[in-house]
Amino acid sequence: QVQLVESGGGLVQPGGSLRLSCAASGFSLDYYAIGWFRQAPGKEPEGVSCISSSERSTYYVDSVKGRFTISRDNAKNTVYLQMNSLKPEDTAVYYCATHETSKCAETDYRSPRRYHYWGQGTQVTVSS
Image (cartoon, rainbow, N blue to C red; front, top):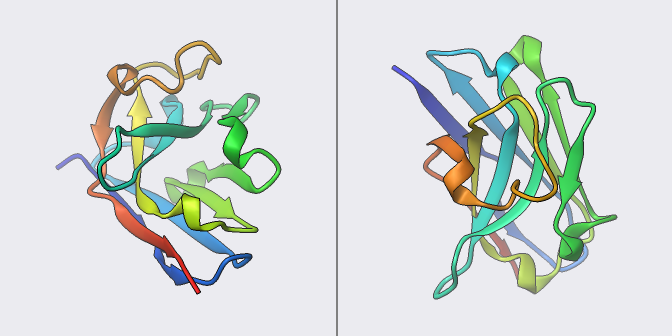
């Protein structure tokens, strides 16, 4: 069974850090670029970051640049999103997804239509 499972979310104070994990089962992530999206209540899903299968390309939405870092460990079939200096506006459900190709492109990595398999999401709440 093909499955993506996110974990690592939780409640954190502003300025704090979290590391999200996206673990795959039933298939290998090796050949896919992987994206992270988030959706806040009442808002459309927002593409946050993407990493190519080779790790040579990474992209970040402007609002998280310098604070978030995407990485992957293909041996563990897992992708990570390290989130530092968290802000209340980062509060959302975070999802990982497999891109339809092995490479992200700056022109399309934020489009949900370019992704196939999705996880169930993990809640991140930034609040004092």
